[in-house]
Length: 94
View 1 (cartoon, rainbow, N blue to C red):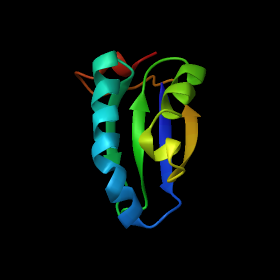
View 2 (view 1 turned 90 degrees about the horizontal axis):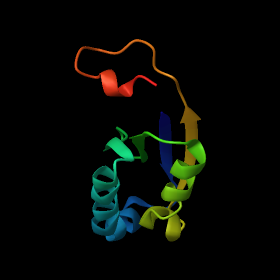
View 3 (view 1 turned 45 degrees about the vertical axis):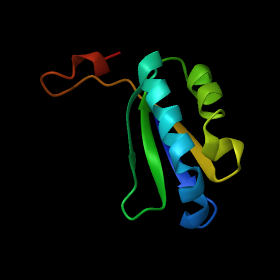
């Protein structure tokens, strides 16, 4: 599993202009089976994705995010191997 941390490198107003395309991209990631969940950081300085798959594949997919394409965010990729999960979340175990 890959945790992806986004940090915005532009003002939030620039982010907002690309948010609809970003949300469409996220929903496509869910439909493709790569994206498990995504959300905003609080306070709004970036976001987080939880993905399944190989790190190289997740990195390539993240490069197609409208935020990445337009240079709005930096991405950090953290590979994890969950061994303890809450009931109902067994799909998170590698």
